[in-house]
Image 1 (tube, rainbow, N blue to C red):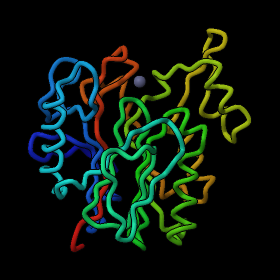
Image 2 (image 1 turned 90 degrees about the vertical axis):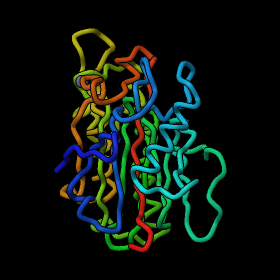
Image 3 (image 1 turned 120 degrees about the horizontal axis):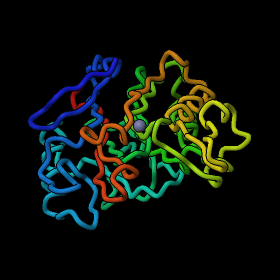
Amino acid sequence: MFRFSQRGAIEYLEIEELSELDFLTHAFCTRRGGVSTGPYESLNLGFLAGDRAEDVRRNRILVEEAFGIPNGQLILMRQVHGDRIRVLDGDEPLPEGLPECDGLISDRPGVALAVKTADCVPLFFVDRARRIIGAAHAGWRGTARGIATAMVEILAGRFSSRREDLVAVIGPAIGPCCYQVDVPVFSAFSGRPGADRFLHPCKELGRWMADLALANRLQIREAGVPSENIFSAGLCTACRQDLFFSHRAGGGHAGRQINLLMLKRGG
Ligand SMILES: [Zn+2]
């Protein structure tokens, strides 16, 4: 079950099924509790034209402090709507700057994996038995490329995760109420299992309403994670601009909220 919580001024969403794992810290942050102003009010983590870089840096520090993330160990990505996944394991130095990828997987305590979103789907994966975590960014392109499947396959292949040990959580994203798509998106999914369930034709020709959360749920299920281990927040970022940034609803002028997942140190 999802619930809203607060640390410092930061309001975030958490889910009981992950909160009860004492080795884990996680949060789907809302836009509330930061210092940015205007359309970026207030917890914007994206360095975007229009917001002050110093405010974004301050927001990052607020997040690190609120969730006890060691200095320099909040790993953000240069998200490119692809399906590349970076694995942070062993003693390999942490990436400097932003790794160009849309998924992160790690077994390292004290390293926070972060996904920035403003409509796209944030995905968390947790191997409860082996204590491995993954976070991914799935817009329509990443979803069509199968990033959720790729996350499960790396966990199973490289970390020997058993699929029944995996918990997958789908965070707040633009919902089928608000996410109208056109032919290129429809074509990218045509022939995919369940496409008729997550793409519904509009009255207008050549337009569909897309449910990206459901598309990812089906993909994760298809990859072998039991349905009872897959959870979806069911909150629409475009409907709830009071809580979340939405690229669509904000007319392109929207900040980026942060979704983060970390193995605790000494846990
Ligand atoms: Zn909506």
